[in-house]
Image (cartoon, rainbow, N blue to C red; front, top):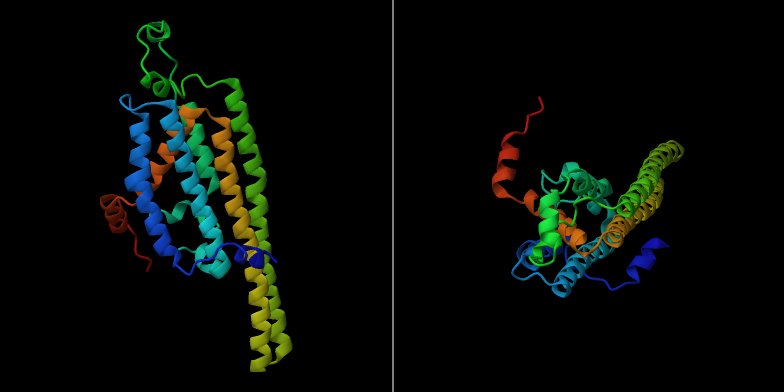
Amino acid sequence: MLKAALFGRKKTSRPFKEFYNDWFATLNTTLLPGLRRALSPVFLSPVILSTQVEIMHHHFRSYYDALDQAAAVDVARCLFPEWRNSLERPFLWLGDLHPYLFTNLLRSFIVDQEPVDENVSKYYGSGEFLDKSWHVAMAWKNPSKTLTTKVDKIECGLRLMVPALAARWRNAQAAFVENMGANWGRCEGRKEVIKAAMGEAVAAEMEEMLGVFVDANRLRRSILADIMSATDLYQAALFLEALAQFLVGFRDHKLLNEFEKCKIAIN
């Protein structure tokens, strides 16, 4: 069973909210500043930048690995995460960031670029005044046909997988409600029988929900890996910087307070 397979990995009793807070702090105070330093003209080196990109990518992978482990303990809590604030929750799908967020962010680098000024290209293209920061500035200028084709394939695969996972989620919920209703009628008010029937129905749904949740995380990991594979070093670095900054922005206290003030009371 899936749950048994997950429990076969290294386990921890640490609350996931605690893990996430530490994970986020590392992202915000260590990894994002480190990646930005590696992208700056003063420190820019392909070797250092490649290391920072791999560290950042590994940080996201480790998050989803830990999330799978937490789901094996309590998938319901992971599907409705208390560690996410009110700014983050609209972007969640099956417990975490919607994978469309990754591809939309990637696509924004492609569609928002202006054509390169020909005189500027000649100036830097001569090689005499070449500065390493030029690689960063030009990373997303005039993206190649090969890159856009790869991005199209990533988006195409995502459009197939997201509805399939959503359908599994809906079907599991429908089956749970149907089983509960049928068992309730057959039990005719006998508490012990009802309790046993409810336990079986809940266990069956949780197993399916765990499967859907883990597959959704696998999809998120896969999309990030595909993006890393499709992009070059500088493109990948800028993408990860934007993704990290996107997450960090959700924790901006001023922005969060303003959002909370705008909430409309439901009468």
